[in-house]
Amino acid sequence: EVQLMESGGVLVQPGGSLRLSCAASGFSFSTYWMNWVRQTPGKGLVWVSIINPDGTKIGYADSVKGRFTISRDNAMNTVYLQMNSLRVDDTGVYYCARDIAGSPENWGQGTLVTVSS
Amino acid sequence: DVVMTQSPLSLPVTLGQPASISCRSSQSLVYSDGNTYLNWFQQRPGQSPRRLIYRVSNRDSGVPDRFSGSGSGTDFTLKISRVEAEDIGVYYCMQGSHWPYTFGQGTKLEIK
Image 1 (tube, chains in turn orange, green):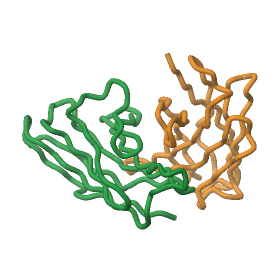
Image 2: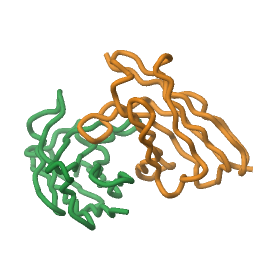
Image 3: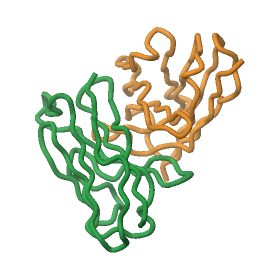
């Protein structure tokens, strides 16, 4: 069974930094693209970032480019999201999701990031 | 960025009746490989999103056949042939043909 478990979400002040992790199991992690998607409270879904299997192709939403960095450790079956210069509007639940056929198929339960003073 | 526009944003439906959600993109979603990466997701209250349909019309494993997707180019539709109580939630279209991926605003399906 495919499982994705996000962690690392906490309350952080504006301008602060945070690293999210997503531990994967139940599939051959090193062969799949992985995504991060954010959901703001009571609102919709916003795609944040994607990384290919060997980490050589990476994409970001304009709103996080230059502030967030996606990476992966295939030996640990884990994908990360380093978040710097956090803003209030970065608040939300962050999901990691396995990409299949060009979109996120399997999603984790999410981890809540709150940016507030 | 590609803008995805869904309508309606709220959809009250009687149980057993059909439902339809439209999704339009600001540019063609036909990718250079010939595929169209238009997807539909369902998010039930309190749950993570679940993909229902990928590449316009392909149902994911375990998705009931009352869900169907259609369309081409910039115009797409999700149809539910007979709405059941478990279908309540928010439905999103998402394009994966152009980076950054973008989602529609979501359509809230509720029972009348």
